[in-house]
Image (tube, rainbow, N blue to C red; front, top):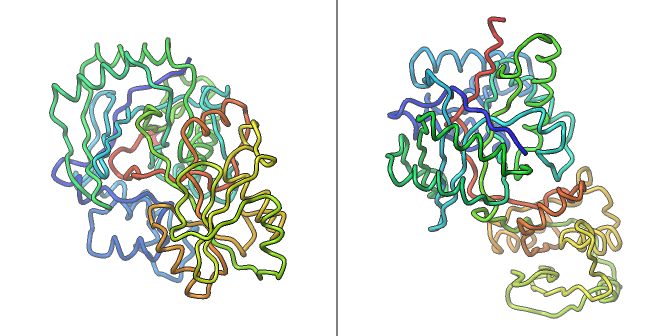
Length: 414
């Protein structure tokens, strides 16, 4: 079973919440962040992507960037744009997009649970991305962005959180990027906090990383380093935990994560494709069932339906993204490593089919492939099997905003 840990969040003063909260650092490049933060001194991007306050010629990984992030965090606290709660609490964070709501419990989760496999992953991470967040966490002495976790719904936890939302007013309630409404509640009654801590400890066997593998690895490595430096510290020391938002899997939606390729189309392409897929022309490329794919080539959409011989009960090999990778990209185009091969790129489903058409029609890409979304059960099954999904298998919407919660590691003065 898993531990959750109430904490004293650093969070926006209510009147600044909408101005501070922003898109997460890893969905924006530096130029986009500069544009968003240019006319908003309250934007959390001044902390999360502090290069926006330094010369454009400076590398975003320069020492000065991390120093600036720490300095800006202290400035936000001094100006009381950010405040810190004076006692450990739990929080509820509800996001509503297109009429669909999902509510997560904001808490800290245990590094020990991660290293012991009770917080399960489904992706590999890249060391260079870990290093960036490690340096950011160390400079700020804080988990500056939450990890997006999920679990199999528990009725007792659901009843407690639903009741709290019904009987208490949110401290934040605003609509922001992509018309998503964000609402946050403070759970400040000790008996309710104890109830939730106990329910996770007794009834929740595992948590699963939905999004944020690099942030998780970074937070864990920082925590372990601090633990090694302070071997006599109590188990309750803040560096033994990392900031998380935990959602029931039943409330989450994974969007399609599509692909574009820039490759020559050989004369025998359709013949080779037909060996593993039934190919038909269609008006629209969006697949309406698993094991079917949309392909946009030379101004025409096609539906590719995987033949029975390709199907697999293996939790990874049976994924739609695996079928496309193994039997089209690798077998026909010789794209073996999608992490490094510049001939392939990835397009989040929120951009729609028109985006795929425009990318191909522009001549920058040869063909586009639309994929039926991976399911939450797929994700949990892969993680339970101790396996790894292909890169870019999942696209979650809506995104958790950054700046609403910061977890103080409390080691600056040690």
